[in-house]
Image (tube, rainbow over all chains, first blue to last red; front, side):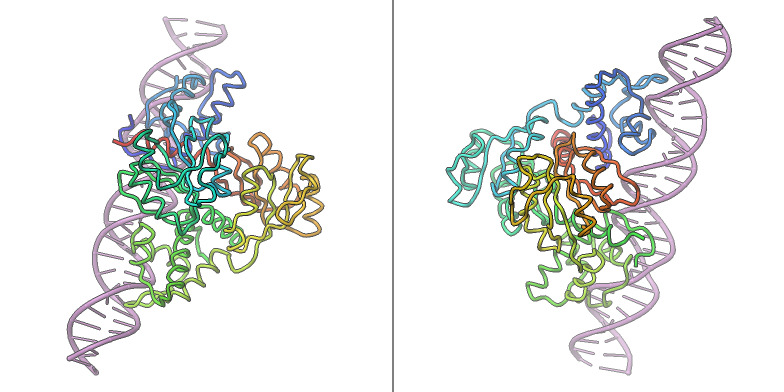
Length: 209
Length: 209
DNA sequence: GGGGGCTTGTGAATTCGTTCACAAGATAGG
DNA sequence: CCTATCTTGTGAACGAATTCACAAGCCCCC
């Protein structure tokens, strides 16, 4: 649908707009203006309109946007109309927290597998799933392909695990390892680097007048 | 130190560079070029040099940078030469995972308090700390000021908790709640929005050819 | 000690993202 | 049906961030 490449910042804002729209929908509102969306998201109405304009024109001049319709459109644009099959690799503290994370399920991210390399954990049942060996990933994926692998292993193991994930044929990766990972260009990688976020905060706190 | 406002993207990269520098240091290397740093970080050498140039000139032409010295400088720039006193608010799954997160301690972020509003949790000992009521925050902060509050409560409670944190006089906030929070301009807020990150991945997966 | 080979630091050029500003379309009311 | 009012959608202007390109400096070796 989008004619040119969409900026990362735009996609992030779309995600915000969607959240607000859902709130508006729950509140029973039927119509919303770019100005109202902007106020909630801490941005400007022009920004909202420009963001939406990359994907089409969804509003009515003089009136605004239909909440229900726009919500639907946002969901489709963000790829949230389908379910995504997710496996979590590394069931330490972060992995365990993610496995139980409600936000996953709510947005259609189905956790269908847990993997670890620690033999003490392999075979154990956690959250209705059996933890399996990372070595089984390729075979498992052949039988029942998964869309996304969540990497929640310690930094030193992360690149190796990612290589296994890629070799298994999984092409979507969400990493929580605090390092820079390298993947082939046909694999989509999104990293949440907590260490980086902490340091960003530390920088900001150190440099305010 | 920095003459003009530094872009967010630059600070993020500095954080990456620091990680590489530490690796190089551990590997016993004494010298590194912008080209080598760039290769690791998936960027360009010009970008590396430009990033560093905002803060001074740390290299030697023809030679590169002294690993030890540059590491030191990066630490100072990012505000990592001191310790930060951190409290975690909300000891559910995410809060608990964070409380044990090694990356915190490693970078000088000392978890000195745990808070929750659930009376079943208040008073319990977790990870060498007693969970306290959020209502005690203001008094506690007066006695022993903290630098950073980590928000790990459910979305509907987050803004209320943030208001309490602000009222208590804490001016650094790291939030993991998947909503847009509003704080006064003298408070520094950094949000890690997992829902947004998931949707970003979902978007990327849906829109590749 | 002079030349060759590297690598930095930085203005200039370019690309990318945001903001401005306004015509176009929609509604409502007289 | 015409006017007043509102809000969208979008080129154009602006500003920010990245990339280019090269002079300046440093080291090594002959």
